[in-house]
Amino acid sequence: MNRAEQRSQKRKEVVEAVILRKESVTVVARVFNIPIRTVFDWLACYRQGGWHALIEKNREGRPKKITGEDMKWLYAAITMGSPLNYKLPFCLWSLNTIRTMLQQERRILLSKSSICRLMSHLGLTPQRPLYKSYKQDPNKIKTYLDRTYPDAVAQAKKYHARIYFLDEAAFRSDAHRGTTWGKCGETPMLKDSGGRFGFKLISAVSARGDMHFDVIEESMNAEKFINFLQKLRQDTGCPIFVIADNARYHHSKKVQAFLETQQGEIMMAFLPAYSPELNPDEQVWNHAKAEVGKHPIKSKLEMEKLIISAMLSIQQKIELVKSFFRLPYTLYAEKCA
Image (cartoon, rainbow, N blue to C red; front, side, top):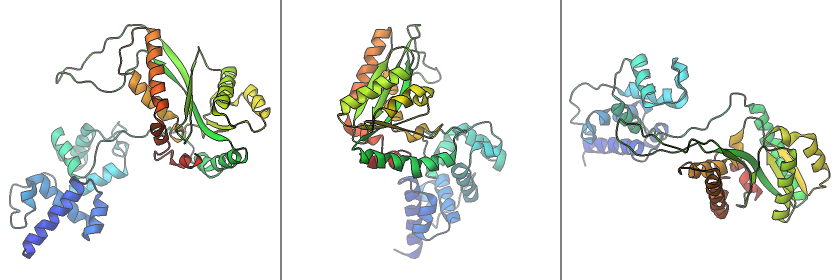
């Protein structure tokens, strides 16, 4: 293999690493010991003429619509900022948003399909984002992770208690999740019974894979919350330490007075405000609502059956429940099993 062939092969390996193996541009540049600008130049060549364009002796052709410098700029704009930085009234990087920004900032006009290919060539993929409240306080999260949660673990060990993360959620009959196939250009229409009703549930999960739940009649209050804690303690067969959000009845005088009488049998701590991503129990509702939302619901009784079925299915899948503790924001709680 001559030097020209070696250089062509290296270009192909670099482009394959980004496009096929989805490795980051910075990592690829470091591994192959080349400037980041060079990686983007080769990606631009591939985008223009495919693998054949990476052959050193065959670089002629029509002028590139988007250059390596453009691709480098776009990669940085998407991975290090948001559309709001470019005075675009959106929070998510959609294809239309990227197309608008390229035209606005670089005077480059591409079709949506070209933008889609361009994202793939940059090693970027569409992903479901995590949402955080603007009211979230980073200092309170740090205090929770550095002090509140470690103290809870220590207290649980002292009383040989099991740690549970607890949460409540509501199911509505007119809520549907997911996508459905249909004719191109015609948005599918879903028909429901016209009735609007719902259920409220409470659940608790542990890093061991345990999951307990109950249906709440009407609205939740301090008495019903205490009843669930007592039932959870009884079902668990050992002391419990519950970590919950900051719902008003969680902090009520009645609940606090109840906890003071438990003498280490039932203990409680609280998550930072506006931080649901730290609670593994949130994933119970994500899975249950996704399953229930797939079905047409004609009556309240039918909805109740679907909800119970979905919750029992989750309860039986120990490894699934354990996986709720292995997400980026819940991994801190995995070691409490």
